[in-house]
Amino acid sequence: MSITAKELARKLGISATAVSMALNNKAGVSTQTRAEIIKAAEEYGYDFTRIRRDPNRSGSIYIIFYRTHNAILSYAPIFNELYDGVKDECQKEHFSVKMMQFYEKTDILEDCFSDLRISDCKGIILVGTEIREQACKQFLSLGYPLILLDSYFDSLDCTSVLINNSQGAYLATSYLIGVTRLQPGYLQSGYSIPNFIGRQEGYFKAIKENGMSPSRSVIHKLSPSIEAAMGDMLEIIDRGDTLARCYFADNDIIAIGAMKALMLRGYKIPDDISFIGFDNISESKIIDPSLTTMDVPRRYIGATAARLLIEQIDSKIVHTSKVEIATRLVKRFSTLKP
Image (tube, rainbow, N blue to C red; front, top):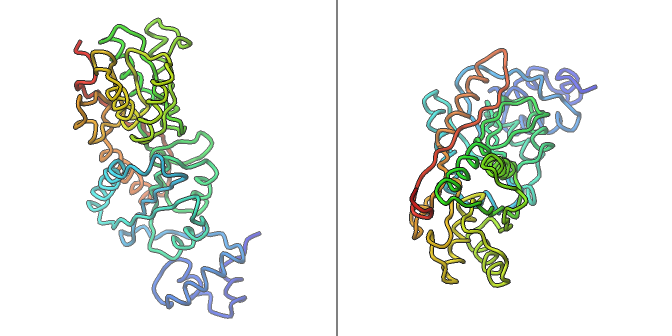
C-alpha cells in the first residue's frame, strides 16, 4: 500500500499543508523544499495519480519526443511541423507549450518523470513514433492527461492520434498500378515501426485487390536515411538482383535514396522505373524528377492532438479514442502520366 501525504509529512517532520502544496505544485514552499518532498515521495512510493489537477489555464502542455534510435526521428522537419500544430492550438487556449526530448539509450525515464512532477505540467502529448508499449504505460501511470501521437496500442486506455498509414499506402499502391499497369515492388524500411507496419498492410491489400500475387512482389529492405538507402540500393543493383519496374516506398527518404542509386547506374525515372513515396518531405519536391508521394497533414495532426488533450484536461469524464488522419496523393514526375 502506498504512503499517504499525511504519513509522508510525519516522516519528514513538516506540515501536511507544505507536503500538499509541494505535491500539487502550488505556491507556498521553496523550490528546494518542493524538490526534497517530491524526492521523498518517490522513495516512499507515494501514488502521484491521487493528485487532483487544477482545471484552470495556468500551467504548460508538454510535448515529449520519445526516441529509441536516431534513424526515424533524426529527420527534424517532420516533427517541427507537429510541434507547430500543437503550439498554435495551445496558444488559442492560453496554454504555454514546452518541449522535452527523451532518448532511450542515454536518458533515464525516472529522471524525466521527476522533472515533470515538479513542473507546471497540465498534460502531455507523447510523440511515440518509436515508443514501446511498456514505456507508454509508464507515462500513463504518471496520472497526467495524455495523448499518444503517431502510435497506438490496443491494450492501453489512452487517446491516440496517428496517420491512417494503411489507407495512404493502399491509395499510393493502387495509383501506381493504375498508371503503370504493372505489379509494384516494395522498398521496405530495414527498421520497423508501427507506421511502416500499417503501410505494409496497405501495400499488400492493394496488390491483392488488383488481382496480383503478393508472393511475386519484389521487396528490398533499405535503411531509413537517404545516404544509407542509396548505398543499400547500389549493392542490390550491383549484385544483379531482380528489379521491379515501379516501387512503393515506406517513406520519401527511402524512395529518394533508391532513386539516386538507380540514376547513378544509368536508369531513367520514370521511363525505366517509377516511384511513389510517403510523407511529402521538402526534398521530394526538389529532387529531379520530383517524387510522387502521399502528403501527411502534420500541422493538422499536431493541432488535433492538442485539441483533444485540452478537452481531456477540462473534462471530468474522459473517453478515449483512436483518431486516424487521412493522407492525400500528390502527383509529380517520378511516375508515368496516366
